[in-house]
Length: 350
Image (tube, rainbow, N blue to C red; front, top):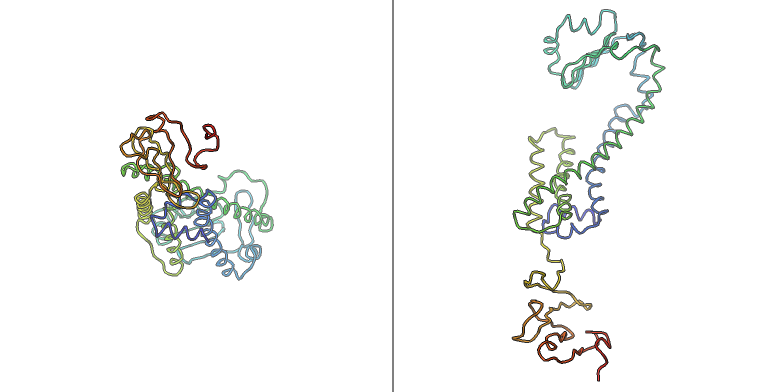
């Protein structure tokens, strides 16, 4: 259940990104998988159940036999025994292959302008004549059967039963491709969000590794994905649109990564006690018993600090390197306890 806790943290606790960026790669991938693939599978399941309910749980073969009329396609000409017309939910389909019902006649007699007026309130229009198809989707277009090429064989309803198997395979392949694309698009979107985060972090004077920026971007997109899923579920019963949703989505993603960067800190990172540029370095390790100790190799008041390290070293054991004694008094270096140096590190004690 940790993955769901990560989602809550990504949405509600910007300061929690300090821990989220340290998650393993597989845990981050599982996070994206649940946000993209699972909702898409739920969507496909809803569509499949709706289709099965609409078809009274009949197979594709049964639907094909019931709704596809007997036809013959020969010499680039289509012949159908009956006239078919469907007019519902913004869609109009009309099939008539009598000799006088050709696409050429439809366009020449009615004209494009009148066709546009007649079908302007429809989202989809498909008119099939014996010589081609006239359709409206994004625009008006026509397809003539003779443009397909010369076809020597004769096709009919029975001979096209093999297409049903191809349709099944095509649906499965399309679903798999869709799932892969949804994953890829999420990671690509996170990449662009990473670039924005790097610009913002640079402006704020943050020094964060690129990989951590990318991890932040992955989790920053969580909120808009969840909101999108909620909108989709509500739209199943109450139809509504969110104007400029894409721009709101991008803005929310940017807001989350900015909050994450503002709250992000490197407080858990252990630095070297010696600053290579000669500045003061802070070193605060935790000993094996869990107590915190401070490190200062020069622990005598008024003495120089060769490592330029601030702070005192206190804890269960007192530790001094003896480096300063060797420099100032020339005395031998002698460990004060057994844990500071191994026995015999500088000769046996006399």
